[in-house]
Image 1: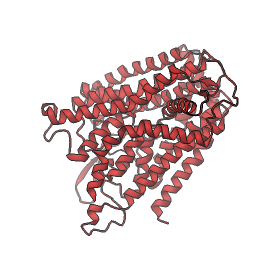
Image 2 (image 1 turned 180 degrees about the vertical axis):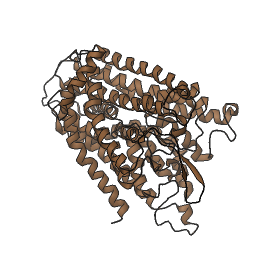
Image 3 (image 1 turned 60 degrees about the vertical axis):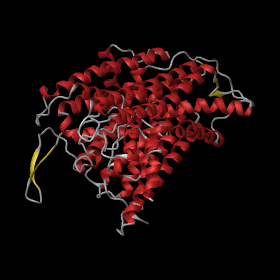
Image 4 (image 1 turned 90 degrees about the vertical axis):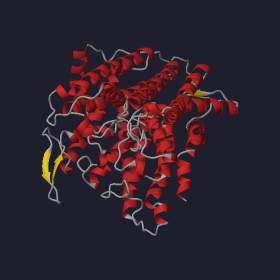
Length: 569
């Protein structure tokens, strides 16, 4: 067997092997059961005492959302001030300057919503201070925010009838101290051992093999890389992200980082089944997500290891597939696996340039983000799937003449309206934003900044660059087709608006649905109840997701990725 393909198989097997026990552990953490890290309780109680928070006070869904949005509003001002003023703050040995207001606005919003879209180059756009106290801080708390929101929904669905869904602050702290922090410490230590820098020295002057000198950036890289992967954050400490040899030094670190992207989103899907004591339903949800993920892996690995037909037509052999834009230390297959993992979740980190991949690979990457339910971000990926479960239950109930119920709660007009708005919001903001950008690019050139405009590529691929950018923003992903010149006031502000809408409105809707269902009278399962833990319902949910989410984007893909793929032949 090809060793590159074997590496892909081993990584997928390890993801599955880790996610199952991790899912059980996460369920225990949120249920307050005895777990391995109970020794963290004194530290957690100290934080609650200093903050004046009683973690045992239950919240209804409105109080839960108020707490969630309030803390995010506070961190926005924190990030803005530090990013603009970073040039005057300590831990800046390389004398990097502060960001402009529009770039800081985009950066702050991007990291606040767990997207980590970067309209700057990592090592030169931030100082060590903002890398730690904006980027790394946000990577913990924003990932924990999504996990806390899912914990609240699980609490609501696990109860027969209740007006409360848990305590947001408690779930937020537990997500950091019991899940994100210990996993980050383990991964961070391995990265240090493998050669990832971890210190506060300035740029290092080295002499390369050609005899010329080069300045190499350093800094607290290992700590930030660990949480960027585990929290599905993805922002690169270096501009080249995880294709940079200091951010991803060896094949072992490449494997571990790629696995780290997937394990918490996978585990969260399984944790739901363990939490509500319906493991079969958890396995069903996990199975649909896994099948869709593996289909994407097979397609992209095949695309990137078979070579480009245009190059083959020139009589040039491509024994290792399309290597342009790939990190040759890892190979085309490893880059293809990473591209699917990072877009099936809301991670967005890269170990090769997505802009250089074949059009069908780009199609898979964008569809992963446009569907946004194949594992997705930590917590929020499952929550997006939950939205489609509500729609699938309602449609299935109408089709077979059974009462639309989920976990003993009737699905009625109010829940359906919220679910439909959340499901349709995602394609709406992506498609309308892309259309607006394309219109401005063609008809209002005075908005276009810089010589040559926004795009390095014209035609089908140029449209794909803009399409990918807004898809990445709406899905809180952060990756991009790097041919787009995005550090302009138009892209910074328009992307930030999409980031805000794409993050907070779905969370508000999904928590509201859970709160409304929790308050309803529980109806025991009977002969007329629609079963949601069967293979048939799993297939139905997949069909609903594909029809509502994927097909919304096919006309745009026909003008971009599909048209470009056909042009290769």
